[in-house]
Image (cartoon, rainbow, N blue to C red; front, side):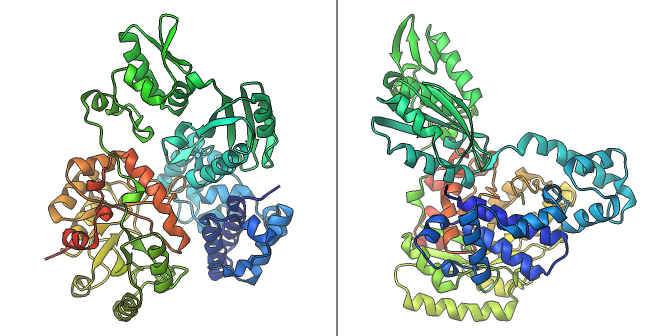
Length: 573
């Protein structure tokens, strides 16, 4: 039974969390977090690497000790160190730490002073107003915790895209080996590239339905068979993800794909159109009386409704149907149109690879350019660069550009926006860079007015090319900070500043509605990975999915442009 990369990464992340709560050496904690990030972002399976005898220490941030631990997880499915830590602390402490605003220090205080070890106990204590007796807690903190717990109850059963994607790819690859399989696709929110996925809906046509169902429920990562039938079966994977397989007839495949892709609101809207045309529409097809008049393909279904084909990412009933009727649907950006990445880190701050290694990885992807944007000095935990170290880095970049042909490394920085809206490095230095990415990394709880003013002032400095992860969210861990996004978007337009769509699957920041707002105001979007290793460059696929959900076309995306046009677009006077 193969162990997934996500399971290894989750084990290391949980160890890091529990060590952090215990106040262990921060470098040790960081090593586990780094290993989790590396393994979670790999395209190749660590289980396969172990089976073939590959040296895991070749992976960035994986030393001998962590490599041996990874091999132990692959071979046994568990790690004794984590089990011991769980006995001492428990997964409840980790869940508490992942509530927005509740970090390791607060969890340690809650556990040591109030004997709170779970979300349920925390909620009970907050309702009884017992938290406010602790230093650093108060009435406002109690209310925030209760709100976070309430929101968590509606979202904690959903998987992030990398987990869903790895499971989907493995299952589809496995099922494709079955004789008689003709068509297969993963539908649902996964196909719409929604930020988190509740379950996986797989549709197939197959001449040997019984054999395909038997193969499906025999998948090696099945934790539990929920149901097994002739046309539908459901399983739980060890990752906690539910997967449903439906076998549908060829003549209704398109209708089923449309129906199970959703969204629910989009489906209701299309059914209403069918009803107005005196037709009936369901997962089996479009019917005129008892006659099926469409259903073999999705394009056929939409055509029968008098609509142009609507891409899955747009199917949220937010204007796409009217646009399809009028022939005004956007030609959505595609990953093949991306010419470079404008937010990446090297080992000079908290990245895992050298500038040259990052550049070579970018060249392998066919990129014309890669911006190295290491952290500025304010982010001490990431070994941020001061003026001297930044200028020394320029010499390395110049050398790499001389040696490496085909991809240009741009001199950049991810400069911190301080509380008053000033930037973490002098303007004269920032003016000498090719690209300046400004980011908020602290003071997330400022009022909406103060946070907005802070960001607007930074963009008005005359040095900022791109505002990074503009709302500061971490999916499932930290909610967006309060700010006036419309004012920020207008300011970006007025200052000639682009907004980043951070492609890291933990962020996917901007949300689709803000992408559309930026598009409407003529503000460029930079789809960037925030890569901290060469493998992280692959996150671009998630960013493009989010960009498509935000109705973005190639012309809206800064890094679809060649390097000369790019430099003209971000040039500051």
